[in-house]
Amino acid sequence: MKQRKLLMIPGPIEFTPEVMASMALPTTSHVAPNFIEVFGQAIERLRTVFGSPSGQPFVVAGSGTLAMDMAAANLVERGDAALVVNTGYFSDRFGAILERYGASVTHVRAPAVGDVPGLDEVERTLKAGSYKVMTITHVDTSTAVRVDVRAMAALGRAHGALVIVDGVCSVAGEALLQDEWGIDLALTASQKALGVPPGLAVLVAGQRALERFHSRKTPVGSYYSDWSEWLPIMKAYEQRKPSYFGTPPVNLVWALDVSLGQIIEEGMIRRVDRHRRLSAAFKDAASAMGFRQVPTGPLHAADTLTALYYPEGVDAGILGRIGQFGVIVAGGLHPEIRARYFRVGHMGAVNESDILTVVGALESALSSTPAKTEPGSGLHACARSLNEQPS
Ligand SMILES: *Cc1c(COP(=O)(O)O)cnc(C)c1O
Image (cartoon, rainbow, N blue to C red):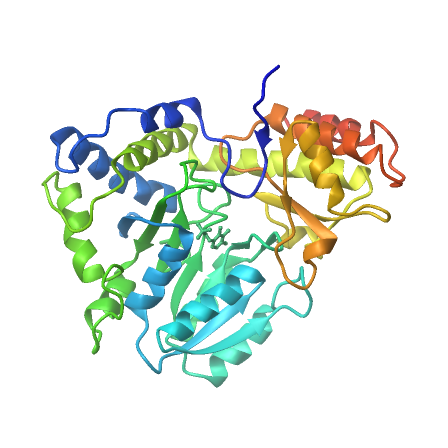
């Protein structure tokens, strides 16, 4: 019997065989001509995936948290006012990182877990202060809440704040048009919708962000994160020239280039639409099985993952049972509701059969609990939704 389980958590995700094969290539020198070519091409491809023809990509060994750390280290100086549009655990983390670099942080929080802060309240706060930066968590992975980044970013810009978007759970899964939406810096990590094993922090800085960085009055407070070191490296790789600051994770960069090639081949519009379609099918199935979502309304529920409260009589014990049916899902993360809900990731190369499998596993696991779920209701709703929305 196959031992492999289907990994349906909000990162790391299931990676394509081509991506995994690139991880097994013999590692070469970071200045070998074939590696320089691949790194240069990956940098160019990131502009397409972020929708930022004018942006400067950075690819650095580390996780998504390093990408957030780099954003704050390079764009914030001691005493700067920063506004955090707070939709959960990862928004809180951005606030903590900004404070570490000396920013004075104001959070605009959603009225309740699962909700989004109102545009009017964010605007009032922006008007009342003089904010140098504003951060938005596009999809907060602890709540599955998605923010209307386009509208939020426009507000930040209108009030003179540099707009930073944590797109770790959205880039390459949700619609994100960095240049068109006026986002000054967008960041992600390899292991989520970008479809590459964990280990890469990825950022794309717009021209206003670079200007802010170049006009700093104080040095960057982190040696490893300092863009003064990384900018010449990214430019050199793109110009297909050898360079060195810190050894790049050679195989991960190969894997990144392979995945970006697959993403671009599918096309951003089709890819975002696939995520929307599969997410809708999973959410329809979840409702039919009697689950209630953490996001308080469908318009701010993400397409990259789903967060579901356990029904009456069910607790986190069901996660192990779902695992016995061959699917790994994630427990809760938001401190206020941690024990009351769980999360299912559906991003990257996810397809119809993955969705049907996770729905089947959930339904099978539920049947041994007191939950009053009609057997077959989830799969029935899922199949209907998939049939109604052909690809
Ligand atoms: C996963 C995630 C992070 C943190 O990324 P790590 O790679 O775990 O450091 C930050 N923000 C969001 C929205 C995430 O989903």
